[in-house]
Image (tube, rainbow, N blue to C red; front, top):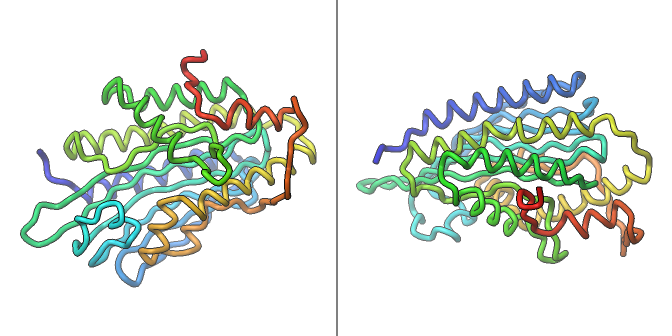
Length: 305
């Protein structure tokens, strides 16, 4: 089994951030990412890039971080208590895109690498990540395309990989207090070390490289659809659910806060505008009601084709 190579992972992640920023700027046509480099006092740092008030993307953030320290925060050791007392490195790229048009879904992706070390012991490492889609108005074709590309990302690594990580995504992006899904899912994986470093690293790269072909064709299909205040208000209402999940349940948010990460970068995932409405009930048979009835429930989209 080959030894882990953090420098190679870091180089890939920096390149991925560059490539995704270029792709989104090209798609938007107007918006540009502003970079904010930062240093973590306890060790490490990163570069946060945010596009605000673009033509297509109301807000998009693509962050790279590489932090290290003498001990892992509770968000990591509560799941892996055997790692207490080890030093660590954590690096990753995380992105969240909040489009302007309510017919274009919000998208999230993350790929990351952890390594925990102690003197006279083999390092413990793993990869994690995935991508998921959160529509405000559902379209079957978009869901099938998204999941088809997710399946393609997994295909070289075994026929069981997509179904397993698709189910994990459905289970992870669930709001238990609402008893609904955050969106239509995608892929989610964590603690991946079972294939050896090279194969696990290749899988992480495949997930990272497949985000653009999964998302941008949907953006191009929906970006020019006409909408009015009704659709905009519903989009803002549903964005509130995104806020609830990220603040209450997301592991990455908890890890970032507990590890002393940069708050502005961690909370970049939140939308620029959102709203809450007491007792909101969509009109029966409306597209807004269909979102919950058809799309915000786990479904095998590729079996529906």
